[in-house]
Image 1 (cartoon, rainbow, N blue to C red):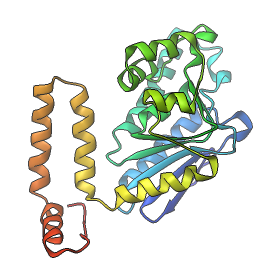
Image 2: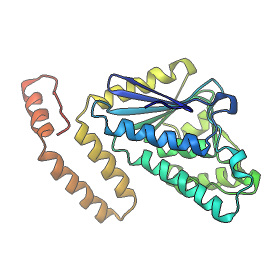
Image 3: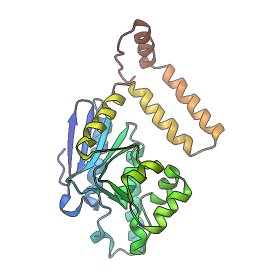
Image 4: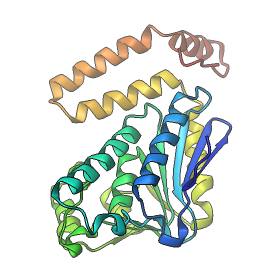
Length: 260
């Protein structure tokens, strides 16, 4: 499939999605949101793709936020529809069933920070700046920022970021758990590819079940979460991948997983 606002590349078991609107710091309009959703669907249904990397074109921005030009004239109902559309696309990223790694190469503000938080792993360059500046415009985050940020960094830290509207550095984002790692700009994509490649070498079914169990577990009580884990464990141990993994371990060889 061809795209106007992003680049979609496959490299072995990895797919890379690059938001390609550097002239507006990769701001997200509705057309770009739709293309992100389509690219995720393409990666999701391709059995050869086992992990996805998302980044932004250019050196300045991952995604600077939603496109304000599309927001400024919306009435309440249209704004709600816009928010729900963005939430839907980010939900699709979170529940892709394959690990999605955000390579945060610069500004990740507003909708850009929200998209990064919907990814499962976030690696930032030293140039990265993350934040939710919506209060500076007299509005609030609409694509999950008020919900995902407290879950990632705790309520107190999240509220400081949300209520001040000030961006934080990559180092501060690492300290509070918003980023997994911080690397030099030239190492950002190689490190993301290394992480993605390592995950891609593991059992694909086990990876998918782990993602689902961890995320579903956060939305329920501990007893309920443990039941989710036990169910996923049962499914995993009935798979061909489990039999291949244990046999390879006993035979001291690399397993040949099939995702079944």
